[in-house]
Image (cartoon, rainbow, N blue to C red; front, side):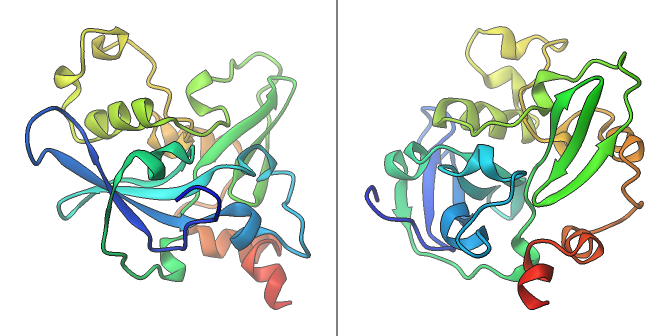
Length: 205
């Protein structure tokens, strides 16, 4: 799959453990440069993910990760399976925290929400921007599936270890970060785009 952008709906299986059949399915939702650029340019909020892929990860009928930025090796090292359609509702990008405690914003896809941390609230590394390599995505999927005890003997098994979700939505007390950023309660990502006039809302304008 190297050399070209995988199409939305492209899917691969990745092994979660060495047990036969213990696999999750990774589906491509978008390639930023092709699918999320406006006028040939990515918004500053998406710039850290220019070379990544937006995917979701499922196990059987269960959605483990509704949106994750991953490195391209995930697709290259996975086992291809039949593609499935991607709908507008499937675009659920991670929400990440950018900046410093004195000047921070919550970037949820292309929407940007100021975070008033008062210069004293620490920004967790698990909410910082950055795509996941295959090894970390596999561990994240196991944690999301409630199978943390199956991870190899590393810090990941420690209940106090801060899991590097790099997505505020997946972190403990996620709602508090959205409240600090004054994101309206219950707002869907598509509604957030329309509210700020970015992403697909800008394309239609």
